[in-house]
Amino acid sequence: MTDEPLPVTLADIEQATRRIEGRILPTPFALSASLSERCGVPVGLKLEHHQVTGSFKLRGATNAVLSLSAEQRTRGVVAASTGNHGRALSHAASAEGVTATICMSTLVPENKVREIRRLGARVRIVGRSQDEAQAEVDRLVAGEGLVMVPPFDDPSVVAGQGTLGIEIVAAMPDVATVLVPLSGGGLAAGVAAAVKGLSAKTRVIGLTMDRGAAMKASLDAGRPVQVEEVASLADSLGGGIGLDNGVTFRMCRDLLDEVILLTEAEIAAGIRHAYREEREVIEGAGAVGMAALLSGRLGILDGPVAVVLSGRNIDMELHRRVINGAADLFGEQAA
Ligand SMILES: *Cc1c(COP(=O)(O)O)cnc(C)c1O
Image (spheres, rainbow, N blue to C red):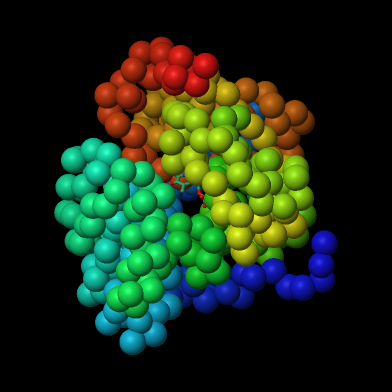
């Protein structure tokens, strides 16, 4: 532990809230009758999967784009993500008249390429892996001066994600526990900084899948470490935290009260509960908070509880199979 201030503070997040106002949706917060009854404390759902582009990533990407200098705007932004960050950055940049370039490998399915183009980005298809796509990003940054907007390890991205935490406390001022999905930690770091800045005693718990949980392994090791990536129903939670992580590792270490891992079957149960009981379609990564409540892994809960439903971008055929009872869709691959 050091006494150095954290890279993102409540003041940064409040500033981000003012900056992105009107560009993102303040998403609804709804009490869940079924989960409140089951848990014995009020449980509220932050329905962030209703955000434009289908995930909270629009908050961070929009704050990052709006924080660019005039000169950086003319150069344009670049990223290698084909998932929710790529979608969000494409939308955020084109909304501001800034050119976004998204680099992806030749292995990325055509529908994902079309989707990113539809959101207004230039697509560069290079190489046969995510690493090769990232190498192209590095070339465009070094050679053409494009500005990379990382998916999580960046103060303006973390501050943008944190605006969701401010909305949670506004909707549930006496919230005692916040459940937040965790991968690279941009969402958890931002939400924890906001929530604890406004309500110091509130517990913030990170949830992730038990397959390839890079942040959990890094927190246990006391430094960023690499883990093997394995297919999961929570595909948006895959990927490492970066061995040179400069923002989110320290924030998650200092701010999260706990990190809990969930099995594929538990995540599937979360998706099913969202659909059957709450009438909501969410992706695996967005289901981990509900999955944790349903699994009983949280022990004695301090209520009221707020649960972040972070995204809805799931393949609808996969969703149908989960709803129809398939639990461990990636089990054989993983074995
Ligand atoms: C990116 C993402 C997460 C994880 O966010 P991090 O900032 O990487 O921890 C969770 N849910 C969804 C839907 C996402 O797209």
